[in-house]
Image (tube, rainbow, N blue to C red; front, side, top):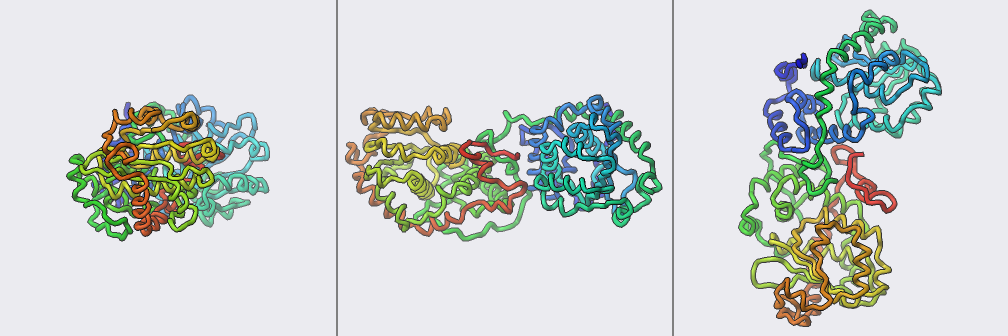
Amino acid sequence: MGFKFAVVDNEYKKLDLLKKEDVNRLEQWYNKQQHLPKINELKLIFFLQSCDYNLEQTKVCIENYYQIRAKCPEIFANRSYDAIKHCLDHVLIAMLPKRTPDDCTVSLFKLLDTNLEVFQFANWVKMGDMILTLNLMLNGTQNDQILILDMEGTHLGHLLRLNLMVVQKYGAYLQEGVRAKIRAIHIINTSSLTEKLITIIKPLITAGLLEVVQVHPKVDSLYDYVPKDILPKEYGGNDVSIKELKEGVEKTLRENADYFKLEAKEIVDESKRISLTENALFGFDGSFKQLNIDFEFIIKMPANLPDVEEQFKRDPELKKDDLRILKEWLQKQAHLPKIHDLKLIIFLHCAYNNIEKAKVLIENFYTARTHAPELFLNRNLNDKALDKQADSLCMAILPTKTYGDTHLFFRFADPNPDLFNYNIAIKGFDMAINLFQLQEGVVPNQVLILDSEGLNLSHVMKVSLTSTKKLAYYLQDCFPHRVKGIHIINVSAVTEKLFMFVKPFIKKEYVDLIHFHPKIETLYNHIDKDLMPSEYGGKNPSWKELQVTFKKRMFECQEFFDQENTEFTDETKRVGKPKTMADIYGVEGTFKKLDID
């Protein structure tokens, strides 16, 4: 089946900023996205032009485009001529044959039948998008668009039947999925009803769109913005009539009906998405254009860091080119903080040297931290509450003389429940493992040993369900690590009750890593006994000595924790829709996944 689509070579001729090398880079990135459908070069050009030839924004736009379409079947499913042909008698949605002197495309929307019984808003939006899509495919890239909405014949009954969800979804699609370049929206033949309509839809669209809306009680004032002669005859113009526009639209849809059979195959296959989790944020995959820019910035890091070059020797799979690509990608992420090379290497290593997974991990890590300030902000060890937790908890790396797995040890230093603050304990735990990780560098695996001696019901009663959900998500989907095992020793009935409480938030692969040891002897089937503190029969210093060393080590790195207090996302600079706490953690305790809704 052949379609007379726009010619790719003509696009390169008419678009001065369109570069073949940019399209090739975009195509290389796209071909690595196994979850995305196959598309041709023409569509890649459309995406690139709509994003002003910015490769990074184009990738975000492509992801948005296909994900929004997948989530809006009422608009983007069952797109056939037969499904919408009855709408052609009810509403006119058409591109005017002539453009404005500055080459803007003008579209007209007008009711043909004002009978409420035929008002099918979702189907009309579907038909309108099919018409816009075909116009693009047939005629190629366009400059700005001007929309004319004729309100003649509309009344309160239409307003009451307006599907606001469809308005919101399609508005998001236009703004984030196709990046429509809308110069102006002219609403003509208005009445008091128009003001009510604008009031209703105002919260659903961006301020940018609202700024381009012009209201015209009569058509005459439209001529100040759109040349009269390009309008249909019914509007005083010299061009085709509304009847002829309608016939032209019907002919175009009918003759190109088979295109929508091909379009129906362009769907996302989430099972093939390259991501750590199914809820990965879109838009941060792929490599970008090569940049000869030094990635220079000053970051306060803890003392005694391992050498960056040494990390590539520790993990032969780590590649300097991968680090360079990751750094170039980070330069383009205006919403993310600056990140030290060593930390980027750790993200790469913990993503098993998969660049795309590392990007997802970085995005998840900083976004989750930003929206849980009670757990990740105010990391000042001079704060009395945090200092008290440091005295009541022992957190340490078990010293070893050879390079290998890192063993992290945790227990109560003082089990008095009055000293226990769950959120601050989480904060201290996170500060410790972030510091330990950077000072240790790349390690094969991490093993966690938790001594539950002293845990009682009073501690359990202080455990926050909401904080547990956030912590579980953060550790499982955001924090860079390679956990080999989690060993809980001195297990009691209280330990088991606490585990049953948190188990619903733990993924099966992590549950399978957890080992319970009512008696410590069984622990030594998994780790070398000599690694343990002396109280446990090992050859390392006592846990009390380790705690003193740990606390000293933490206080020596306060500047680093001060730096961490600034390492959050700036959602005002995020490409696309800013992420909120509800996007990450849900509303009122629900654990909503990261999404583009």
